[in-house]
Amino acid sequence: MSDIIQLLPDHVANQIAAGEVVQRPASVVKELLENAIDAKATRIQLLVKDAGKTLVQVIDNGFGMSVTDARLSFERHATSKIASAEDLFQLNTKGFRGEALASIAAIAHVEMKTKREADELGTLLKIEGSEVTAQEPIVTPVGTSIAVKNLFFNIPARRNFLKSDQVEMRHVIDEFQRVALAHPSITFTLHHNGNTLFNLPNANYRQRIVGVLGSKANEKLVPVNEETEIVKISGFVLKPEFAKKSRGEQFIFVNDRYIKNSYLNHAITAAFEGLLRERTHPGYFLFLEVDPKTIDINIHPTKTEIKFDNEHDLYAIIKSTVKHSLGQFQIAPILDFQRDPNLDTPYSYQSKNIGTPTIEVDSNFNPFANEKPKGTSSSGNYGGSSYSKKSTEGWESLYVGLESKMTGNLEQSNIVEVESEEVTGSFFEDKEVTQNHITLQIQNKYIISKIKSGMMVINQGRAHERILFEEFLQHITINEAVSQQLLFPVTLSVSPQELSLLSTIREVLESTGFIFSKLEDETVEISGVPAAIGNQEVGIIISDLLTAVVNETEIENELHTHIVAKSLAKSLAIKSGKALSTAEQEDLVNRLFACKEPTISPTNKSVFITYNTTDFDKKLL
Ligand code: ADP
Ligand code: MG
Image (cartoon, rainbow, N blue to C red; front, side):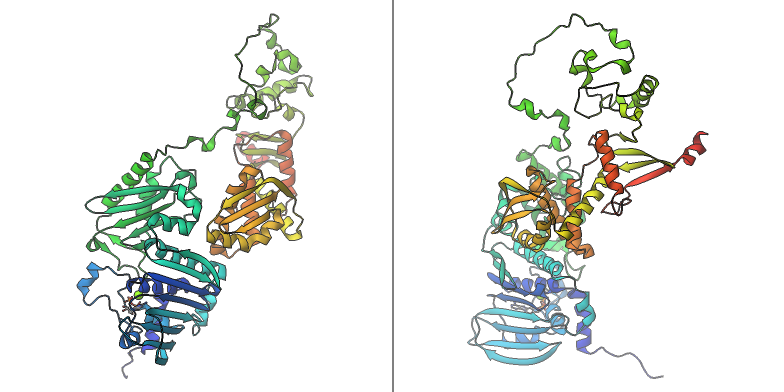
């Protein structure tokens, strides 16, 4: 049999290599931006069309290339950045593999214009699928412009695999931001389909972060600085109250390179211990400088993961540095996230003067009078509301059964009239149980309801989410939203990319009842909201919504309408911990079972469980 091993032709090898380097338009963005930085550019423009599917172009004013280098730069393993293996341990450049341009040229139409300062004329080079189709001298400014068109034109499977423009653009922006944040002294711009998304003049770190996140970011930043033998740390963390549900604002840079490292991320999160709301993630921008010899950036083809020689020391240093900064800026644990609303001063009292307490002695008071069965007492017999209104939350639940039995044995019906309009754990609210009502709330979390076969335990929060979700969906589809005009429009500052997101989902939001009176220049002005939303909640609801849209479009390509309805339902649903009157409990149960899919919450969790009396029989009979 003849030999069967062949060397792959270059263009095939390049296409295969391209699979590693170029997954999506954002990969091209990263490689081109990094090359421009390595070329010592001070001004870099990124132009993108159709989220990079049609065009990614990077124009820099760096040192350019000679005619020969321009041609060579597209060869595989062609790099000016290392000459020997030892150089790998001294890297001060972004690139070193020499495969980015070769890979990109294998799967796109590439047009390069480049000129060095010393040269009279520049070079124009066109390559399509690794084939050079033109090379000629041209007049062009000093620097390099590389336009990558029709990505994956010759690999339809890869092209079809790309996500929606919105998702791809999100990745492009992510890459752009990472590079722009790492290099504040370079001027960057990003244009998408002719619109300027970012215009970042050269700046310091703080200004650059503000340029990327929007002007509101400035007051959120807490500086972090430390210098030790093994690392120099500078940068900022976001104050804990700005922690978000997504991990979007977490950046670690090592020697000006954006990296991902869950171990170091953990160190920072650990420093925030006790300061964060549940399920939120701190924001940070940390710039680490270490000796290049102590890291290995070679372990990942796209080089976002690196290995540190002394990871444990770094962990300890980062944790204590961040902790120190938070302490220095007097950011103490914020204890009132789960504040008991019962402790708030009622509205009616807020404007009243605080007088000296007076004592009234009721000379008719007989401490034994109360010993007669409670069922027969009327509200007056308690000698004032202070007795009946006492919050008995906690211990009263132990007596619930007892009490209802007691009253049940007596002459029934609306016996106890408690003055309290407040429903929090009153001793007497369970009177309704005796009146044949069918629901009972336990631990302000679950509603128990009698059903034919036994009983069901409903998670009140999830039930309400399901109800609101279906309501919002209906509003959106038939466009019948009930809007509530705000007396004072709410203004929010948003980052440019949040703004562009909001513009995409504007219509959906308007069909739920939002009215936007302004949506430009980092500002959103909201003059109307869905009837269910309170004024003060608008900011947090919008921010949750943006997070949801970013995360979920990415993961599931889900419909905007669903994402919006889901997020609003989640924000507005009652939570566990909320006491509900019997009427409210019943309303909730009734509305739940009027839903199309009462069994699962919009986030696919069970809304209730049922118990058959036969289950009880097994244990109790
Ligand atoms: P690497 O960056 O790993 O060296 P690339 O394929 O990205 O590999 O680039 C190959 C070479 O082309 C680089 O080493 C550099 O010499 C040259 N080059 C690429 N982009 C530019 C640019 N924008 N300006 C100047 N030279 C560039
Ligand atoms: Mg490169």
